[in-house]
Length: 199
Image (cartoon, rainbow, N blue to C red; front, side):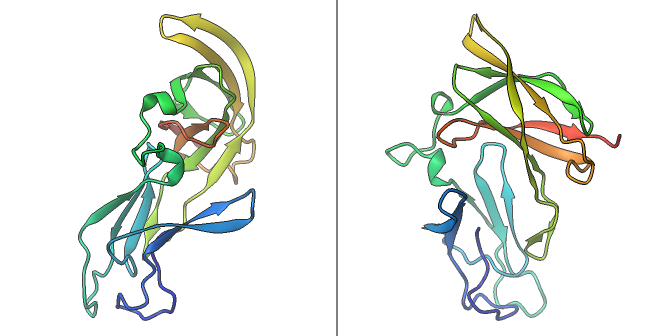
């Protein structure tokens, strides 16, 4: 969670919340993280990037706003950082080598080939459609995964997973999604872009 205000003061940066927060499903609590350098209040936007970072931008842009923020900050959650605080490189992240189909329909099964022997979970994250600081289109759809095969090639060990898009079209809405794989430590891959089509 980024941006917003402790108390609403429309068209102002007063009472802006600078610290990011991360929800933990394990503890049921929010953890306070690093702070942004610029207030992100009215007309601000936060977008999930393919590499798991969050692009935070905007704020202001109205006739009565005292300040406009036509700039961008990029936030890296702690699970994307190594012990030195640097962004994880490829070797510290799961690798989606290939996806059997980039256009999917509700109920469809598809294959994902992952590098390495690790256990993975998978999720689809719908691309944003935001306005006035609200992303009404955000959704994360966990996918059931089964190991369909293993092997070795010139790039090393790989595992093939069988994934299924949920049957209900009210859950798997048509549109464009990021497909992420997460390892046992919760570190996400760089996403592949897939589409769910009207079926």
